[in-house]
Image (cartoon, rainbow, N blue to C red; front, side):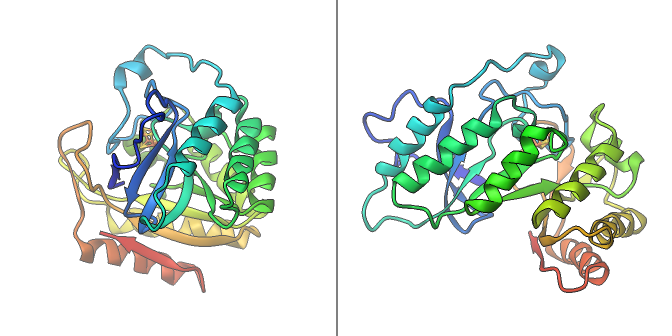
Length: 276
Ligand code: SF4
């Protein structure tokens, strides 16, 4: 995603923050406060288009150290308090950053602390978003976290970049089975409405996504709805920043719109947007 870290909010007293940062976000159309639970940049996926992950961290299977919920909440409170009066509007607070938050043990108390810090800053109307590859959403802790998000003005945004097992393997390069991702997405969407985020791109190795792949992807989304899931929206993206790996390029606006149109055709009444 094309998100630019904003430095004018880095006031004195905020130095040394490890987990919380501010970005100007294309996704939200304004400022977004990001929460990064993985400063060491490891992930259980190794997406071809990734812009953040340190592949050595994946190779070394670096373990993520526990994080004190109070530390994250304290950093968030400091950032929210530092916003200049009359400055750019804050659109959301997002668990995003580098790595996969849904696999983080202790996510639930940490999320509670984030909602509490948001409310204490008088910003209860600002949504809290979890941006996830979906791999950890089958865990009981994440189901409880989803209930928490739904009750307190938050939402899960779950990624689905493929319609077939083969394309998923080629793009996401993970040992997590595709069936688990699909089941977790469907389960989460049955629990509460979710947003699906999908990245499509042109790769020197894979070429552009084929028509068959796009139709299969749209069909997977339709199956989620047929199984009783609720999709609050679908966002179709392409790469917007330099990727860690060479040979990955943005798709044009027209190609993205064709992909979005396939989803609109498959999903009656679900808002589908493309972000060239
Ligand atoms: S899931 Fe996200 S952070 Fe992990 S490798 Fe893929 S793009 Fe990067």
